[in-house]
Length: 169
Image (cartoon, rainbow, N blue to C red; front, side, top):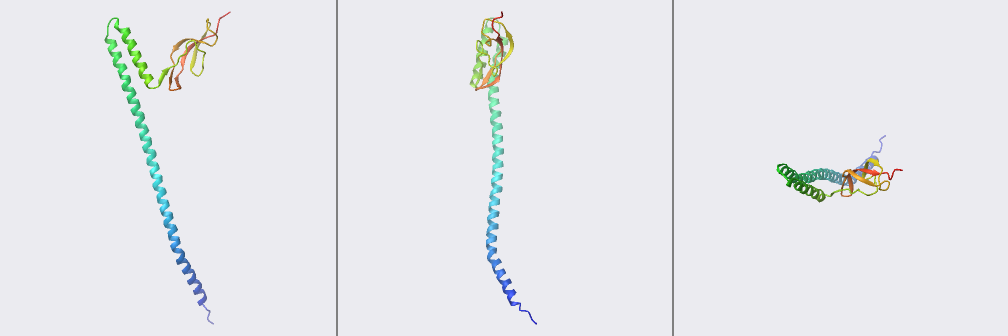
């Protein structure tokens, strides 16, 4: 007895036709996937290059800022060398001019001294090195041993101060 194999062949033929019909859709999906993957890889590489470029640019800006600041400070060094060669009464006046120049350069870069004499002690801006009796009220700064400085509004060095503990009885 012979089996009828025509029916399975038709099924196989139908499956083959469906596979051929699905094959273009599958190829389109594969092509879209490859395109998106390629775009993703290019975007990731572009971002990595951008990050590296920004890092280099930041390093360059920082170096340039430090260089400009150093060049300005060299003016002060030149004036100190001139003052060393000066003789007589002009020396104190020259030193005062150098101090003013140096202060101007610091202020140009946002570095200002912290005022503290006759003000209440502030532990965020002051470092107490002594606590002595005086006519001033308790907790008042009466002397400054080392001047403190702020850059913009940030304390970069606290002032070292002497604080009053009031009158001793």
